[in-house]
Length: 356
Length: 105
Ligand SMILES: [Zn+2]
Ligand SMILES: [Zn+2]
Image (cartoon, rainbow over all chains, first blue to last red; front, top):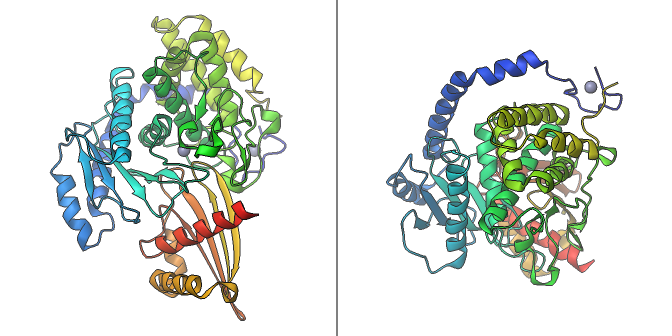
């Protein structure tokens, strides 16, 4: 059952028996109950999060917004590190004087509407959870993250990175982390963590292509090309089409993403390479999209996303994607060539791995 | 005092490291760092609390801070989501210093 070179302390290299997958799929009533409980818990956590006296005022403000309608709230951290202090634009407000606030507002609207209109998912929790974005966080903060409740974006250092909120695929990536938290809750470590990263890249890129009305062959398949500094035009954080070629600069070094299992990163860094090994499934998604179209591939991946579980590994992911594809082929939503395309794409990146 | 700082991961998967000998810093920078260290109030950070604060979410940076003073060494770890409001300005400062150093290499 074990891979020879399994280096993880908690071994996950098993294939889940099909009967367990069946049970997972059939248990949708239970899943819905858990989702509602999680939504409540998050709404509560947002209220009781660590706040100072200034924060309490803003909190009351956020509380008066429309709830259950996936309303956007954009906060301006003004270079400080407190979240949700100055609300700069909320759902329905007219344009703010700050272009970063407006970008965050507009792009998160595109992402929310894609999930709702194309995938029939009502916001992060499918219960219309409000969408909270904090921009201008910290001093030259070179990151964007999902903190478990809300999104945070830095302004970048101004040389290597410009503003992290200035990108539809980055905002799509972060918001999708919220969706993952509410669906499979993929653990942010090793292969499950790389799958968590992969799904965020998939929907980041898919939503950008949808918004720009691009096809798989027109698109650049880059994540974060819009947040690179002026001297790094053409570089990006990741390339789904050609993992390992997105950047080469003084700050980031050279892109080390593998595009095949033979180059799988086994080191400890980055939670055992969650942003590194995501290159492997990313490449497979690109290959499938080139065959059946990004829109159809995304439908399959979204279906799979809802049947994943927290510790899923790459091999299990392949099985679940194939199962999702069979379901959508049977329902006439995707062409029946999808199955073959998926098998070929995963084979091209060395998946599934044979277990010795 | 020697400070060893690293900032790893994040959306852009960075790997930043810097070692600072505070005696080598110009006076203004040393004062600023001193002030940020006081604000961070590291001596009152209990190790238990740091371990307890489970990282949530995704794409947060992981920070490691080692402070060596004569024979005493203290080590701290944080992420963007677990660091308290008091510590965040210090992490901001050290990260920017690490970037400055890396770009100058
Ligand atoms: Zn094993
Ligand atoms: Zn991510």
